[in-house]
Image 1 (tube, one colour):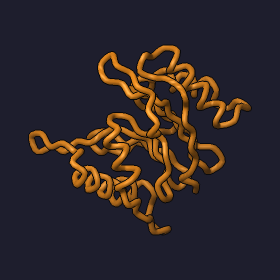
Image 2: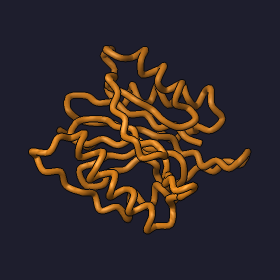
Image 3: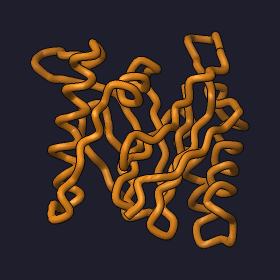
Length: 182
């Protein structure tokens, strides 16, 4: 279920996502967006709509002290807040003493990060990333338009169009948000 794609452009993070809610072979077009802003963060989420709801409505987005390294902040203060929110909302899972959550993209301080179910935080050398069942298609599209004259929204729409063409778990309408500025 889902394709979330994000890029950084001129110090701003742009994230777009589809509207599919998929369970087995059942499909619903959801009104509750997988892409949203919360404080100084812009999110695009996959995995579970419950996780999305908790990150959007229950997470008290932490503030980063300007002197704190962004990656240090994301892997400690930010993730600690996410874990506490998911746990208190009944979403996180503990199996064999290992806690797990879900997968999402998040933009902060002009940088794009992926957070995975083991709460690791990834920042790639690319100016783009994607997650969800349409991830591979979106990444290929974003790679092919890197350095083009397309706007961020045009690039992200092309990436989601590609994912929707090849993946049964991705469907429009596509939602676009920007935020997480430097």
